[in-house]
Length: 353
Image (cartoon, rainbow, N blue to C red; front, side):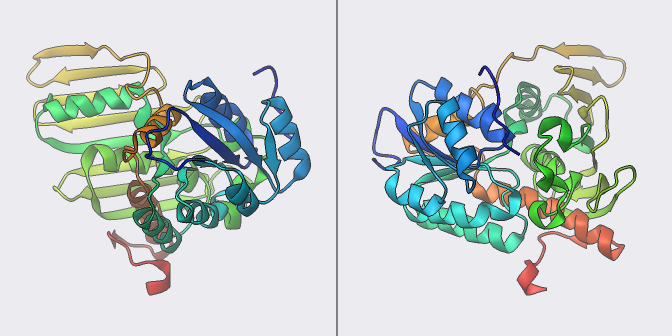
């Protein structure tokens, strides 16, 4: 890609050799990741771009030689002859686009978080269950080689029964990633701050690696930014099997820190996503193992995996239900912080409280 423009068919599962994809939203995540990675896949092509601002839609379509652009997603879904779409919109807009696509049996890759409420997430999961197409949530950290390898080590029982885990996901803040996307600090559009933005990655990883959280106590606060949303959140977790953990996330962490420390009966795993390293220190001075980490994801990355699953007609590894579970942990931290006490999971939906 030479520059970025930041102005601010047949249905899935029918054995098709390639798929036509539409991208809804033209912000940084669409331009830096989704569109280029679809175009790099030999069996996918972006044939439609949608943005409510026509100038953006037209400019991005021109930049990437996409033949069609729209300002209304319903029109795109009806006219675009699409097999799949990526939803790259602000968090509070995910639900309606996802449900509309699934009702037309168009597969969906939706950016994290799945939504800003459990009720909307339930609507999206239900739509996927009724659809002939699939819903995948773009929880990208699962596809990081460090965490894929960590999952393999845990499945092999390399440190025995796990007793506790410390998980941290922090970086300098959204302006470094997408300086023109001011909605990240708009509470209504985003649903929160650092916790729902990047803490959602932390939440998905701990669910993926250690199972369901059954109880937590958390705090979130704005400690260094002039904004209406939190820049820091921490929590103490109890998992279904009794494992205990801590959960930390923050903006204003420079350099960024994405790490996990896993304490088991027979040793400790230290995983560092930024350094790209995994170290295992075994108990009783039995030695240290520096674990080789592959250069890339065994799935080829989230978008490659999504395309492959659509073509094969198989369920992706990160489903709508997985996205909902990650959101539930995040919402649990918010509720605990607001109410000043521990909360049990599963949580009641917002419309059931």
